[in-house]
Length: 282
Image 1: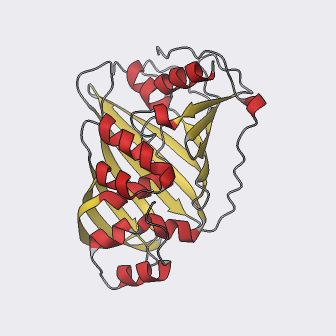
Image 2: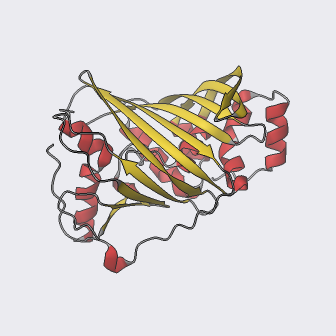
């Protein structure tokens, strides 16, 4: 029953369900001080970006805001999220808000998502799931490594994609939320990121490398003077099984208030829904 639930949930979660409705570490933790000196000193952009995930682990935690834009068939939708993330334990909590239905129907209830190594938990998922129950999705069953499926890219997984940076250039200084940052633009390779990622993200990123239309991920990254990601915009090409043309997905992650409390507690087994989940047909 649990295996069937994982497979069904994996085919009907947020981003995938919305598109259907439209018709559609390995490396350890390097010293953050060295990373900060490289950023300030105009070091090699590729090296700076490949260390960005380690720098986040050194920062401990932060608040996060996410935005995922998807376009297909001339229609564009945006899913937004906000919450906290613990980079050392790879645990996060996001409140995700879905857009209105294409027909202009009433808004969906906000969905609570818990991000954990190997799993995605969702509450207020709908699709016949009781309001007081959580849905657990095994990330190993997702062909996109949960970079797209949950409607929000796991902030640490997004940072680990940068481990696969192949080309990058320093664009210049700007500000994000009033904080001075250095803007980098480049392209990462998902296969390279999977080889260099932490143990928990190695499998999901390898799955994404096979499941996406291309392994190349163009990005714009904005790092502060400590080498911490403040803003990261990544562009994925997602293949939906029910349509021939890839779906263009732009995922933006904003990180701020580093060191903020991030007490994320996973659901008890008794609170996880074990029944069948209805297919989305909005």
